[in-house]
Image 1 (spheres, rainbow, N blue to C red):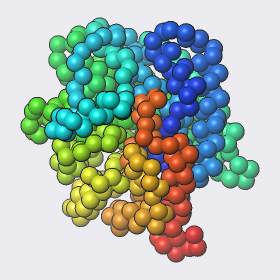
Image 2: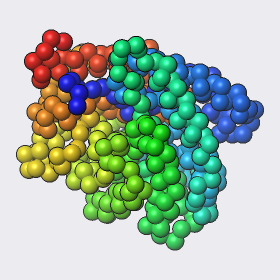
Image 3: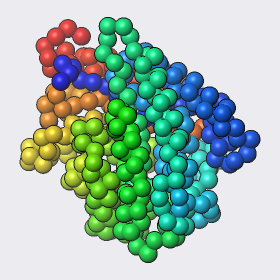
Length: 391
C-alpha cells in the first residue's frame, strides 16, 4: 500500500504529427507501411512514457499512440466490422446551440474519420497490434525506470463492449443484447492479454454517461439506465477471468468543449457505475459541469453505497482548456474525496484524455505535461496533510 496519493491520467495524450500521419494512413489504407508504422509507434511510446515519468506521473500509459480513437480501433482486431456511411448522432447539447455547433464544424473541432459498422459475426481477428502495443509500453516503462526507484507502473486502454455498441452501429445482430454479448465475448481476449502481460487494464466506458445524450438522446432516463445496466452486465461477463483490482474504468460525458447542460447527472448513474467489476473508477471532477458532484459521492459514502474495495480517481485536471490548475486546487480536490472514502482509496486523475482523437485536441502539448506536473505537486501537498509528512 502506498504511503501517498498516486497520480495517473485517463490514457490518451497529444500525438505528434508523424504519429497522426501514420494513423490516418493506416485508417485509409493509403501510403501505409506496416514496418514504418511500428517503428514510429515504438519510438513515440518511449518518448511519451519518459515525459510522463518526468512529470512525476505514477501510473503511465502509452498515450494511445497507436489508436486513432478510443473505440474505432477495434475494426483492426475483430471480424464483423466494415467501413460505412451512416448518420452520426450529434450530442444533444450542441443541437440546442446551432450557431455554436456550426462554429465548431468550421474550426475543424469535430473529427472526421472512418466509422466501422457491424455487418457480420464478431470474433477475434488479429491481436498482433495489441501484443505490439503491450511490448512497446513495457519496454518504455523499463527504459524510463530510475535506479533505486520502484518500477514504472503502466496501464493500457481498451474499449468497453458498451462504448463499441454506442458508436459502432449494429446491422447484423437481431437485438442489442446479442450485439453486446458478442462484443463481450470477443473483447475478453484483449482484456485478459493486457492483465496477463503485467499491465493494469483501463476500460473506457463513456457509454455509461455520454451515451445518454448521444445514442439514447430521444428516450427517457429509465430506458437509458436499462441499457446502461445491460452494458455493465456485458462488461462484467467479459471481465469474468480478470481480478477486479487489476482493472480501472473511465466514465465521462464527452471530452469536448460545449455546454454539456444535457449531461445526465452522476446522481442518476452512480449505482450503475459502481455495479461494474473494475475496482478503480475514474470520472470527471474538475470541469465546471461536474466539479460539484463530489456531493453525490459524499452522499453515496454516507449511505454505504460505495463498496469498500472501490478506489476513486476523480479528475482534478480539466482536459479541454490550457489553464494549468494550481497545485493547491488539486490538493483541495483530492482532500475532498479522501474525506469521503479515506486516503488509501483515492488516486489523482484527469477528467478525460488529452488526445481523444488523433490530430484533435484543445491542449498545447507542453501545457499538457505541465498540467500533469502540477497534478503531481498537488498530490504531494494532499499526501503531506493526510500522512502528516513534509511535501
